[in-house]
Length: 216
Image (cartoon, rainbow, N blue to C red):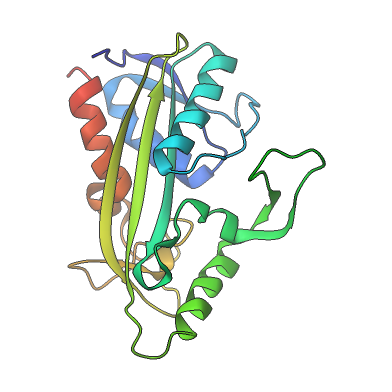
């Protein structure tokens, strides 16, 4: 197993919320995270069929272009009553006026994202199934670390909960305001960020990464 050494590492994301959470998790270990947006790196098309596939391809692209180790997150909301949708398409459900570019690769879609609309879409899909619908859901996070020589490692985490409506809280990002983790009476959107870092799907994946790749 290869360790992550202190120094610069690329967070292969343009999502400010994800970058902030990953930076907070890595900061105490002498790692100096820099985001793909700060390096003006393009976002690769997420054409994988699993969270791990997409995390790996994002980290691999950033490592290739930057010449530095890279970490990428692919995560999403899985709703049991919707056959675990939106799943790997969680960010795509937030696209406003999606555009398929000419000569696009399979699955390539562009456009601005509005997670308020995405949360409404989830709610409306559940409403169609009736008032007694199962509202159980879980978040999945896959973290992939790729070195410039192509070596890669990945780790997966999960947190279970239920969906609430209307959205609650201004913290977090994405679907956080409608997700209430099991054992809590507040959503991720209402939760103190430190508490979310302790129990989230991303935190679980990071604990596995830390045990395998970080020397203390």
